[in-house]
Image (cartoon, rainbow, N blue to C red; front, side, top):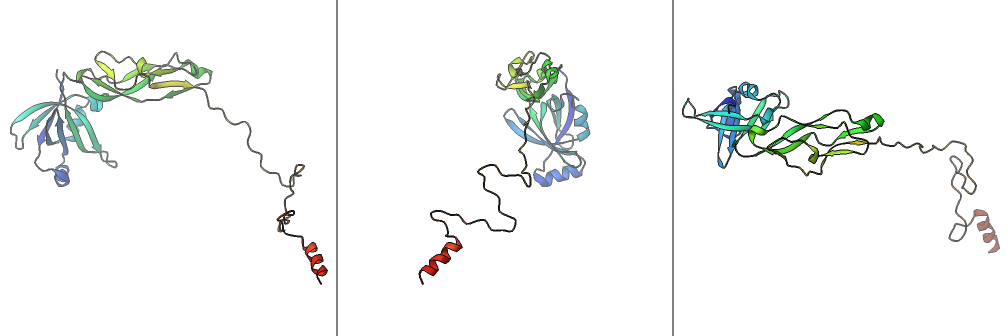
Length: 243
């Protein structure tokens, strides 16, 4: 099977200093690793890599890396995929790329987009469609990796859900998630509180048995009874008594 080819060159300088020199020369640093082989530090042309990626599969595209030694020396071809790509947040240019060697006869673990199709019948009755997962982790041989997975939600009523087990994965593809995990559901709209707490109305008459609020600027009356402070008038009488 033929795959898009990307030319990469082995580089000697590693570390931040070596990477800066590579970028200054208009190239992108990267590394090729996997399959229990020693990693290889490489450089490549950003535009060549981006144009080689399938527009839908993106990093799940299987590539043939043509790895050459510096100065146009020995060349070997490596089947690989983009495992991780670092992007400058400002310029959106590639900063570094990790390529993973793959065996066409062995499974690889990847994530693929999940797309919901149809209109859930429950949404016509006031329900809301909720998508729990937007990507699905799957295992498949490189040539069998799907571009995307689709799930038809047309039959979902309010309270119904689709699960990982309901997905049609295709031959040679298996999900790496719990089959019971929900991927989409139709839920009833959230009930809103019908009554709000009433704000106190100025000048309102207190209910029977409720203590009246103290006048503005005035001190609250002293508490009476046991343990309370004696009223001022009573204190005066006791003073005269003792004379």
